[in-house]
Image (cartoon, rainbow, N blue to C red):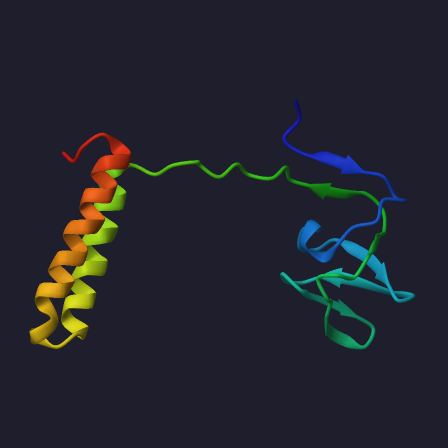
Amino acid sequence: MPTSHVLELCALMKIHNLPNGARFEYEGEEYVKTGPLFAAGKGGQRLIPKYAVLKPIGEVQVEPEKSVPDSVSRATVLAAVEVFYQECKALVPEARNAQIDAARVRCMNAIALRSGGLP
């Protein structure tokens, strides 16, 4: 299976489906995509609304959507919790440290229950 596919000239698309550099028609004007929601035309840069329906000009190479992992490693989660805990502890008054510590324990216990135990 190829890493990308070619869309036909008549296909209608939204701005987020086009790669940078793609040519398209919008409201009777020709544009070249220059950013996530921007394109350049005769009148300069323009914001293209996400809801706008665009007509590609010529062939447009579209990369298939990248799959997002369904999970992250336990080590990554534990490291993130620890960073969050340390930052929270630095922000709250010392009198609230016991509450922050208890919240951390509850969070770690919830992670342990979902992942079959902590390392």
